[in-house]
Amino acid sequence: MNFTTLDLVIFVGFFAVVVGLGVWKSRRARDHAENSADFFLAGRGLTWPLIGISIVAANISTEQMVGMAGQAAGSVGLAVSCWQLLGAVFIVIIAMTLLPRFLRAGIYTMPEFLAYRYNPLARAIMAVITVVIYAVVMLPAVLYSGGVTLRAIAGVPLTQAVWVIGLLATTYAAFGGLKAIAWADLLQGLALLAGGVLVFFLGLNAVGGWESFTAANADKLHLILPANNPDLPWTGVVGGMWIVMIYYCGLNQFIVQRNLAARSLKHGQLGMIFAGGLWLIVPFAIVMPGLMAHQLYADKLATTTDAAFPTLITQLVPVGIRGFIYAAIAGAVTSTLASLLNSASTIATMDVYRNMIRKDVPQTRLVWLGRGLTIVFVVAGCSLAPSLDNPKFGGVFQYIQQFQGYIWPGVVAAFLGAFLLPRAPAAAGVVALVLGPIAYGALQFTSKTEARPWGHEFHFLLQVLLAFGLVAVVMGLITLARPLAQPKVLPVRADLDMRTTPAVLWSGLAVIGAVAVFFLKFW
Image (cartoon, rainbow, N blue to C red; front, top):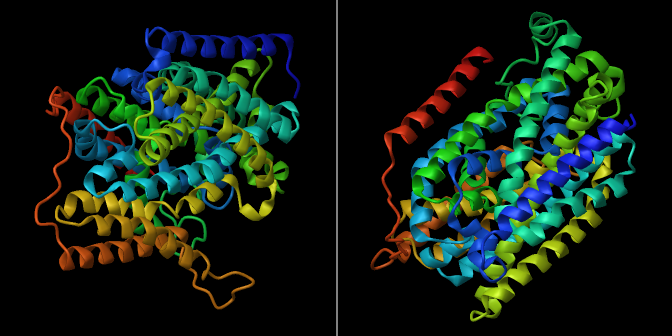
């Protein structure tokens, strides 16, 4: 489907406003080019609406539009919504529990916290693992899913589409930092949600209304799937998804970085809860459109269900608003990509370079190193992304979730141990970070395949649970054998009000209640 002149004007105009607003807002700080706190943490001045919408814009991209809608059109159905619905619950829990501790410590990155609680080696290990996962898994996946979408809706070759997306995101991520990303996300996040809801209603109209849709998809409108479902069994949701959610909502730098940049604890908590509330739109804006695409165009999805959402757009979106939908989709990609680039460059700069190579590096050099690394990471991601077009990866969403299993068990165990085992020694944290990837890798490489018919058949979320359990036991044994004489004393920001207000508490309970209602409706 080709752009009309009006579509092209809307598309280009949207990105001109997004990039212009982001760079202008970031440049308003007088010492922007010399201040690492301003570049990496937006001067610690983000308010809750910016934080909430920015989290949503960073989280929801074409790996959701392509991947989640694709799984919904396939064998998973509405159950793929569990990722966002449980995320809404856990982001509220994290806002009440872990966020106050992290803000009080005044840290730039999550690995930095491990240096205070354990030792510099723990910080270095997590930093390296995180940068590798971002560069090898997350960045290529986001670029690939964006490229697939542009290829489907506009006929752009995959490799060319990937590089165009990378260039757009780098334009403001490299020069404006987190403040530019947050302000760009304000527009892109709103456009994304509006575009998704619009597609939902267009699809609903095409299938004949809500009753017709629910009747035709009755077997797929369930959040709980049997234990033998190969894609998302209920045992995996209950057993291992909570570990994923603790990491993603509370320890994942490209989500948490906005919270660390909050103006106050109240703004940070309300921002996270606001994001959780907005995540409740995802089943309607992304997952159900995937079901509608399968209902309407099953023949077009015969080779890959990852084409579900793009197919719905090419078939249903009328001329005149197509440019807005294209801009919303491209904005979703660049938003997530810019966030990943900023987070990866922050960790590489602050945790690797400043911590391990040169501790007395000037502020100006930190900022310029962060910009340079942003460009390096996007070039690496654009180079790797086209290779994900190979069907062996089983869909982009599955690829992202499965390969992130190498980081979830060890990191979550190390952070939970930092609080639940106050006398855990540095060795416990280091061993957790090293053992986690090894344990999960061992389970991955002993799973049943054509080459390994003797292997186990544990779902990857159950593999995450088993790896986490092993790491937790080892941490406990090390603590029993070599406990600290006294718990570690962590840094404290004396200027920060640590009280959780009633508005925060009631808002969080409202989000959790809404998730409970959704589960009761689509059990």
